[in-house]
Amino acid sequence: MKCCSASLLVLSILVGCRTGSDFQDPTGPRYAAGTIVPCRAQAGDTLRTVTFNIAFSREIDRALEILSSDPGLHCADIILLQEMDAPGTAKIASALGMQYVYYPALFHRGKKKEFGNAVLARWPVVEDAKIQLPHGSRFAGTHRTATAATLRTRDAVVRVYSTHLGTLADIGPADRRSQLTTILADAERYRLVIIGGDMNSGVVGEVAAEAGYAWPTRSGPKTTSFGRWDHVYMKGLRIPGAGATGTVRDARASSDHLPVWVMATLDGASRTQ
Image (cartoon, rainbow, N blue to C red; front, side, top):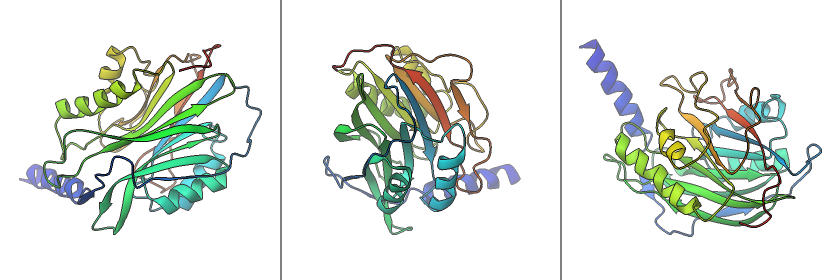
């Protein structure tokens, strides 16, 4: 009985967190701004990518402290954020000197504000889009999205996605795989791709791996109390090896997720898509 009660409690929390209404317009709402401020010598052939779910944007200042001070996150080239609102995204981008694009997926009735995914970059965003994902929540009926941004570095064009796949309460494993497959389909026309975010799964990355993506975050500590759910998948970039990826072990009360980072090199990749 205690086990069932605990399961129902977890389920109610997950469902309650997803109460809201979709933004069905494929082009918006859209928020994009920011000024790029160099943080370190950028060689143009190395990219540091971070993914971080900041849990309803409640603790932006604490999250910003981690992003700006932790050695693995400091001066990141790309930051993929989930469960963001527009003010929180703008504040982090401004403080870190980064350009950003943010598309909210839904309006949360309980929190009375928008939430979605953001891409922050220290390289110019030359194109962006909202990718609408299939399979709505079985309870709330809302749908997930990915925020896509095409970056022009000194040496190449890189397509980047920040996403948040459906929870265990929202959808099943097959539908989660389908959501990731939708992002992979959009990315097919790009040679260099980075996909990251809260996958709500430790195994859905097999879909990306089967499509030829590297999965540098496959191993490591739990990023949530449920498992290692925050990941980055890469195509066309080289992962240097040991020490090229890491997980921040203490979120300092900023979120119920831990941030994850990955270093990769372009290795003289083409300047075209």
